[in-house]
Every structure is written in C-alpha cells, then in structure tokens.
Amino acid sequence: MSTWSAGNANDDGAPTRGWLVGHFIDPTEGVRHQDGVEVKWAHHPPGDKRTEWTADDQRTTLVILISGNFRVDVTGGSATLSKQGDYIMWGAGVDHSWEAAEQSIVLTVRWPSAT
Image 1 (tube, rainbow, N blue to C red):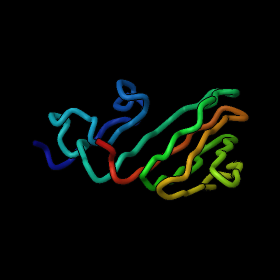
Image 2: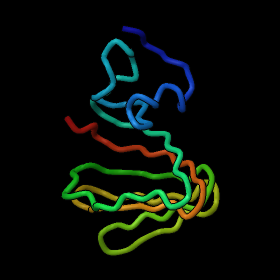
Image 3: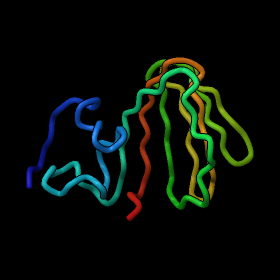
C-alpha cells in the first residue's frame, strides 16, 4: 500500500460522489483509504440541494466554502457561506441539509469515517 497520493480532486472523487478519503475508498488506493476521516471536494450547480435531512449522524462535520454561495441548515439554525473560507461545523447528533444558491465548490471533512 502506498504511503502517499497525489492527483486531482475532481477526477479522483468522481467515482465516489466527490469523496476523496474515507473507509469506502478501495484499499488499493493506499493512503486515501482511511477509517478516521472522510474528505469530499464537491461542485454544486445553482439550485442543487439535499432535500432530505440527515438522521442522527454520529460524526463531526466541517464544511468550508471554496467559491460560490452555499447555505447549510442544521438542527437549531443555518449558515450561509458566501465568502471564500466561510465555514460551518457541527457535532454528533446534529441533522443537516444544504442548498447551493449559486455555483459553489465546498470542501467537507467528517470524522470518524462511518463504517
């Protein structure tokens, strides 16, 4: 197994809906296969949204805006990410949904990687 990896987030994440790192990455991908963390690079066209809320996810999640305008609704509130570097973070048991107000790129990190 390789101890390092380089590539392109768009290309390498395509088979897994943008997820680059996590338990679900084929172990032959080397260091990208991880049980402790998941990383996703995602492009969202305007109007793209998660219509159903997550249910009782037991992980911590961090979403960072790379570009665009992206709203994340969480149990008890919401945040609109509009400036590069804006982020929202929540812990275990907090449900969420999201919507892209315009073309958006976001980086999501979750831990641990659910099995």
